[in-house]
Image (tube, rainbow, N blue to C red; front, side, top):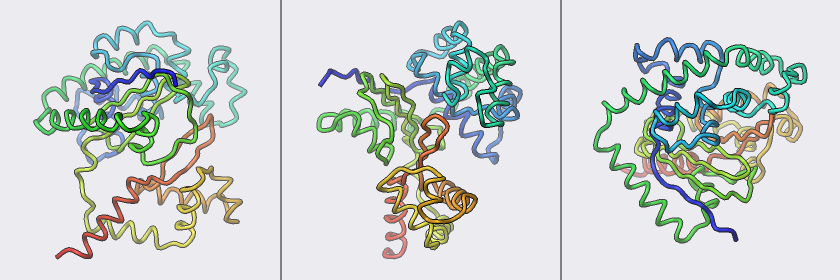
Length: 309
């Protein structure tokens, strides 16, 4: 087996991105005034903040923010758009501007907007990264550093007995649909991201961003009730059992269970809201699989709630 390059640590840029994604997913959190213009530019124009993480495959995310920005400024524009769009549009279409080949109308319009606003996208992203770093710098606490140290120690201890790919899958709570013989593994702890775990990858590199705070939060009784309500549906239970053994896409599930596509979409949306499913994109197809971490946590906490005084 070829020797693997393994990096474990924290990334200021990834932390900033996690914070921005948290703001995007929870509208109850007050948006800092200094971020409003640039943040709303992305949200109103339907440009995914989470997809920005694809840039980490092109620019070293362990760099200080100012160095990351300097590389970003000179980054090839077509490659930049390819990353911003979450690699959903083939790079050849972006380079040749053959947008008519994109069948999805929404994605085609999104691509056109990005191509017409490359300068503005870079400027707003740079503004967000610069100002978010300052916001987070002033809000760090002891738990922040403690969590990073514990994460590093845990990853090192696990790598003694596990292949880095298996460890990445354990952290994600799923088996990956797409895998390669990765040369580089990067494990990064984050504190502000709402997602328990995110991965970015290409043929050579696998990056895992693990939320070190998510496991501290326990389900409330109301959340446990929501879980039991969602799982009380027979079809949803069957979907979870099916995708546990075989990552599947919507049309496949619709045909297998002999129900309409809108019905399958409704069931998957219900499961997604509880973080019970992982979504992995292969080009323009979304594959769904069970989030084993959330599922096991639900079972454990439900048991504790019922059995403990």
